[in-house]
Amino acid sequence: MKRKDLILHLLGEISSYILEENPRRMVVSLHQEKDGLHLSFMDDNDHSDDELVRLKKLLNSPKRPELAGYYGAMTGHDMLGSTHLDLLGWQVKHADVSRIDKGIKIDLWLGGERFQSEHFTIPNKS
Amino acid sequence: MSSKNVFLLVLLAGFLAALLVTGLIVDGPAGAMRGFAALQVQPGRLINDFFHVVGIGGTLINAALAGAVALVLILLNKVQLSGPTYAAVFTIVGFGLFGKTPVNIIPIIFGVYLASLAAKKKFQEYIIIALFGTALGPIVSFIVFESGLTGAAAVITGIVGGTFTGFLLPAIAVSMLHMHQGYNLYNLGLSCGFLALFAASLIRAAGHSFAVSMLWYTDPSPVLIWMIPILSLILIISGLISGGKKVFQELLEIQKISGRLPSDFMDMSSTASSLINSGLIGLAGSIYVFAVGGDFNGPVIGGLLTIMGFGAFGTHLKNSWPVVLGIIISTLVFGQELSAPGPILAALFGTTLAPLAGQFGIFTGILAGFIHLFMVLQTGAWQGGINLYNNGFAGGLTATLLVAVIQWVRSTKDDF
Image (tube, rainbow over all chains, first blue to last red):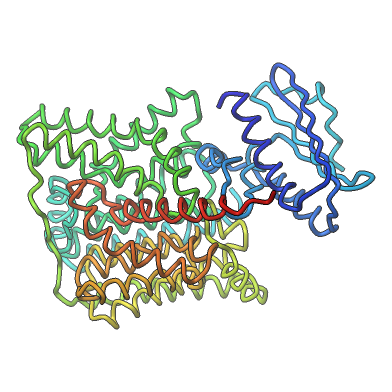
């Protein structure tokens, strides 16, 4: 998939999730390198601890190439029904969800085979 | 390989082995192998019930070996055994009773493999498309055995035609997903049906016609009648033993999932609860067939196996019953018999629309079933019976219609 298309699909999927709760503010930031990219989303919605745990789990789903290569194409095309964040989880290198002053920050790192994590500020897995 | 994978592998391999052994016992090794060989040169268009063509033994061996091709492909490509692959193996075995053979599915799979090379992707990313895309196996059989070509020309054209068809499938399958947004579980049925429309039109333009084929086995056989109930009980018992106390809670969780693609129940809930769900669907389907006085033959058992497979990938009792009720109502309204081939297959395979009921409620499910019945009775003729997943085709059209209307209704409600 073309990088531009992929970014648009990711923007669509996560934005759809955040906008579902009607935030007053949503901020999106993108950092691109040759072999990878970092997308960051911030909102000011209220989120429970359970929701954060669920989000982290979905976005860090075990890699399923057989599903990502086919159903992954549905990412960001959601017009009806609930968002499919597991579709994202199958495709990203790493995802992180953290609380900010008000709301949460969702970080996604994506890349190809030659993805170099040192080019990005990926938190250490503890 | 994880313990879950080993468990599922043993279960699936055991199922295929049981089919093989049963086939050899029922007709004797020589008779069964003769039947199996005869099926490899049999046109597989809808509806060619292989039990009617060669009897029980050869057909069971054919189904087991078609399933084995799928299982080996999954293992060779190091793909996880889970909801979608479990559904694929069950579906291929089911259609090995009325259309698929190890010979006619291989060119389609090879075509999808070539498409993965062309797209510079690993084949494992397209393996689901390759497995379910075998619905177009009858294209290969048609070209080789029915088109009028003979000898090497027929074989080469059949292989090339099947491979080319498989090559086109990934592009079409992804586009079709966007049309119904995952609310038609048998997306490859819609994709193959779409492609089959072009293939059938080309074949008709070349001056050939599709002779109506309706081979429907009606002899009551204890082996066929008890096959699905026994398999269902084995799955339920396996799930109960391996699942522990929490399995009932997990089974209830499955009933709350809409089922929209891709819903891998084995991941979203657990393997044990998915097996129980699969077994319950098999039992419910068998009871329905008994209740309406249907025949337990190739297509019907194929339907039961398919819905059992999707019991791990989108179908459960709660999202299925409204669709089945809609199909029953439609059947009665249009003066059809519930046990007739079209309606009974629609009642089973029509659960491809279960996610609509799961997401939008009972009324939408009933409406989807109602529409599906009169659509599926026509779509088979449109595509000359060369797409085995005719219900997936009709279901895809129905889901696309309903999704479009629901989307439009929602878009008319302005927030500003």
